[in-house]
Length: 127
Image (tube, rainbow, N blue to C red; front, side, top):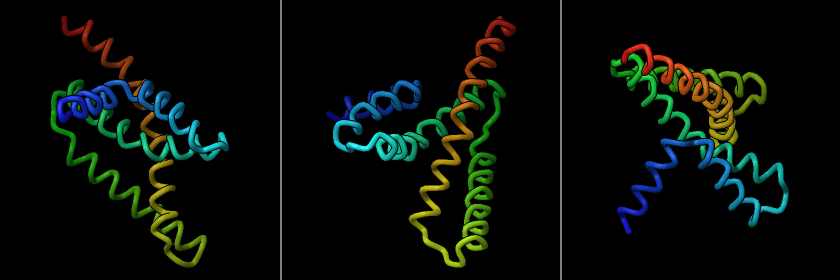
């Protein structure tokens, strides 16, 4: 059973768009409103895109980027906290976390596609 879960996670990290689509189909059965199902899917699968982009950057640049990614995500989170405090006047962690995951999805999903194309080009150049 643990091997199955490991393979499932590896597939979700390797191909996040497919994992997003499958997860949306599953969530859509339980959540009747299409918008809520989509937002839940975005918030849940954003982590797969972050990890996938990090791995792709490591492969393309041939350098460890985990420190840079953690630093970037921390700065992004602090910026969201600051903006949320300025806009709402109070800090509600649940709202901030949801906004953080949605912004990460919006940033890392297109970046995944760009890095996929760049990875293919770099692979052909290196051969």
